[in-house]
Amino acid sequence: MELTLSILIGFMILGAIFAIHAKDLLSAVITTGIVGYSLVIAFLLLKAPDLAIVQIVIETITLIIMVAVVLDSTREELKVKPDFKSYSNIVLSIIFAAVLLFFFVQATAELNLFGDHTLRMAEAYVDQAAEKTGSINLVTGILFDFRGYDTLGEATILFAAALGVLTVLRIKGKK
Amino acid sequence: MIVYILCFILFLVGLYGLITRRNLIKIVISLSIMEFSVFLFLVIIGYIDAGVAPIVELSNQNVIYVDPLPQAMVLTAIVIGLATTAMLLAIAIRLYRKYKTFDIREINNLRG
Image (cartoon, rainbow over all chains, first blue to last red; front, side, top):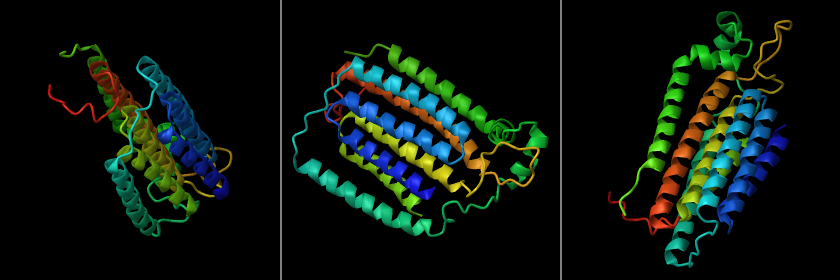
């Protein structure tokens, strides 16, 4: 299980590296799809079918929007002459990443091993959700009943984002 | 343990893209890669060996379910991720129409 998941995440890392370095913006966008759809498979392996369903829908919508944006503007990646600043940026970000990785490794020493999780908070939910909410699916029961206000906030954010997109795309800017 | 580290490396790849790229679309792609790695990390933490998907089996009382709480939270986060990505792309296409480029070095005069 851990091996399968490691191979899948390695595949996602390769896809992400290619997406960041692609010369063509359309291929970069489509390679992001590799990462997103591999995430769907990872969710299925991790026994999260609800997340897999949501992620496959969301990933498809995001890809369609991104492809529409790229086709509406330009597919050309910028021609960047390698200068001192870009090299120093790369070196700085790699040093930054190495420092973050060091602290992350130290922090994960406190976590349980993979697959060795103990239910602390969710125990009450798992025991009583079926009787209290009437929902046989625990994720739905938590999302729409115990934590219903979170879902209300999520709907508010979606509404605000839709309004924002409409506003940004409709107004006429100063020339 | 290696899974946690790989997950964080995926996050760092996104961070590297965010710092070094100068194209707005590439920056949006890097942000969504970082988002994906965080979702994956949270769901991996809630996984239990030999657990089944959190859908109650009424006939059998002795099954172990994986933790449903991170899954519910990640479900919210995925939808919010779509909202932020759409907003970023709308701003990117708006900037492209004004400046005719995605280069962030050209788009440096953000006066109204």
